[in-house]
View (cartoon, rainbow, N blue to C red):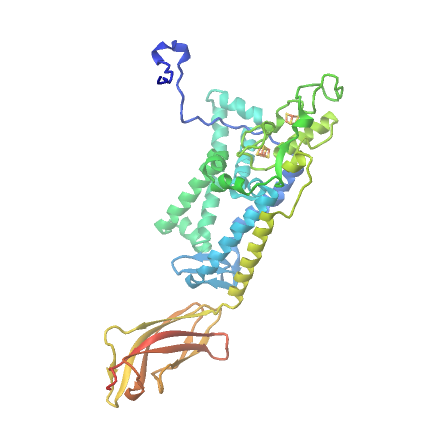
Length: 473
Ligand code: SF4
Ligand code: SF4
């Protein structure tokens, strides 16, 4: 007999049994409590150098120009004494691949330490939170302020907070654009309202992005927008460093008075004060186990340690640990993934180093004159015309010598000695000539070479074609 799936008719339910499920859950605002401790201090050591480096770097000058400048219109990236050209983009790809593998290795060993200590989202959010605490007060004061009706005092505090947030965001946005447009010119142009529309638009864009991300969205960026947060669990194993609550020691949780160590009531070390939850920037309770929202910042470790200290209990009820350690198993540093990532990193760094140190700061492009295939001169020679583009990617001016080979008696008609300034792209018309009798076919491969005078390293060659009449049989 056909079995029927029981269907519960909605009309049969009492109105109290029917409820609506909102697919878009409203974000609950997180009011974090300020905490001090070892890991909070460590965060200062990682966050401040990043912040200072970011804001200071565009102002550093090097040999009369901005030390770090990504000059997109000129398609040149200056990093101190090195200038990268579009021809060097393969190196940029290598650098990105190395950074990705370094992050994989770091994550496998140390979990989300990058997120908790050095990620710009975390660092900028910490600054915004600090501004919030300075203008609106402690956690309890902020909760009260948000619940209170709009009065002058509340308005002034909110205005101050958002004004400072906006100021910091503007400084961030301006600095970011200063990496792509000379910062001294940019500040002058903005101050005199003569900045190009593109520059103004990007400053506004990055200002708003910073204000929204670090001021309003905060942990939402890590939880819903960051792709790294999503795929990094694939790099975790049972020996990866995680922040974890020692449930065996902490449970059964329960409140008690300070200094009360009597365990006759079977209570564990957790006094259920919820301080670990109140300091958490993502608003989770680490006692519920490892969660993807946890960015490994260890603020809950500092918070719990301060509680344990006050209670006279041993520290590290919440601590950096590993799954194996929690299970009482021995830890292992050299694992398959760690060895694999390390080997990949060594190979990639060696290849990049080789590519960098054997790089020739000279590039040539050759375009054949398409207007005329070849030209026969009065002395019976065949001539081809080319346009030669010489790019001097070095930091100094160079004199170069042109030569051509590939056909017997091949000659360059015109200048063979050329000076090119540092960073200059020089376009030179070149005519090559050869006796008709030297042509073995109507289409021959030839090589044009540009060599720096007094330098064997500055040498590059390009193969092109030389056309002429088909030789008679
Ligand atoms: S801070 Fe420590 S003692 Fe307090 S609730 Fe968290 S785990 Fe328990
Ligand atoms: S649970 Fe602890 S380590 Fe994880 S994000 Fe919250 S405070 Fe940081």
